Image (cartoon, rainbow over all chains, first blue to last red; front, top):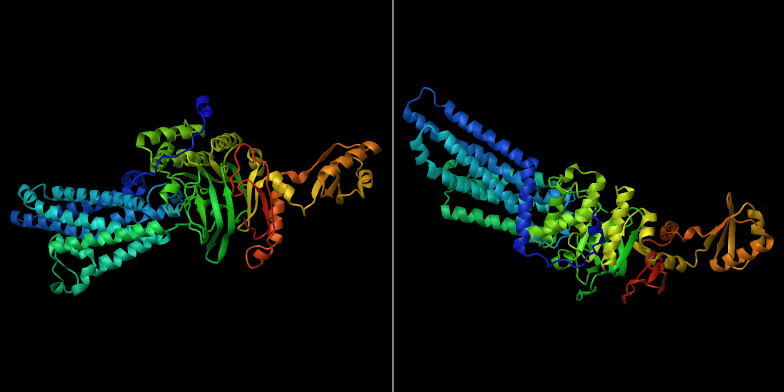
Length: 281
Length: 359
């Protein structure tokens, strides 16, 4: 330590407590920084790259010895299947799970929560900042890789590339909405049950969102994944698809958005009220 | 239950503070008022020190009673939390960040702009000897360096109440000097600094104001010598180092105030309720009879002796439970308060509380 620093008298008197916006921005930025430098983003990128590679490889492998018209159909099908299986049934679950379920839980488990909990940052800002960071990375990866898949799969057919673009945008919109919603779901379970955040989030997403999206009749309304798939214009699939409910686009968007808000509100409430003690000191 | 008051300045006030973890009582009926200055928090493992710290830091909610920091309840209360600097015991940090980023981020969360937070973080890290290492990731730091980063983040926003849970863990002697120097500097500037440690000689060298918690209860608070002098039922030990212990014993046996003696390889240890008189009598007898004496000391005037005695006293008496109230015995004594003015609520009064004690 320099002599000057050592000789300076200590000051006592902290600044005023930061506002919601300031707290949110700092938490968001820090969470993004930690995710970008951590292993989870690498895992997300690898998973996304594998899905992209599989879809693009399947699309070009199916092009042997078929006519031009059939090749065009196969290319469009490959993109649709890629979104349906690779994105709606895998990545849209995996990415929010990776980026958000541990946002609060890992801080509690690793005991770093003590640092933020003893700062004058509002707990709603803390919860929402962490959720927003996870949701941002999720949406960025989903939308970015979706665009890459569209371009890579249809690059050899410029007409289809252009014609299918609005449909791809619609699909990406539905995926983004789902990614944001699932981030809120993971956030709630992660903050409510920090000691088992991953398991509870995975169980909820697996049973309610994935399994029930294939269920018969109106039970599919429980699954936002089903609503999202229908918003994207994908076939209902699953058990008894002929009696699967139709989804009005406006209603679908409202439903997913509403559920996101509900999960977020509960997350904020849980974070606001919880002690998050670790061990019996 | 107490009601929250207006701003009380730099202070910690606990009113019958109690905390349970399920069926385990971690802290029971602790009442105290600490004003500016340096306070050592002592207690055996599992005595409730960390629970008390975390209650004050706003990390836990009390089961019964209240705690106020500068007159405000701290749990999830930004207005109280902004005045607190907390260095937790756990060796947990954001390992993906550099030391500078870690401290600057937490400074930003205290309300500083990004630029000012970075400047303050650099200054705080420099004060704890991490100027060269601050741009490296925390994950690569040694235990002692991590400890110093934790300390830097706890003072980066110039808090009025600084809570340091085992701040000397993992630090080498030179770092300890640096840390204790910085802690004292903050206390001298008007902050309430409460730090827990097992390193008794260092707490003794840094401050003589202590709180002692045992079995979840506050068993003593105040200056070491005041607490010591209040323990009237516990005779003082006077150790006389002499090559002729039996001759000395024969001289002092029967002297008023001396209630016991025991021989040791180095000499004799006398038990007395009046150490000053005993010192005087020994000196007279030694001169009269020409007994060779190397030294006369009081071994239990040290903090360590006091610590062990009070903990033992607490565990022998009533602990938590129904007998706590019965075993209540408290002695209070006003004492000199050094440079800082004494608050009205007894914050600077030496007090020893019997098991189940009260304020």
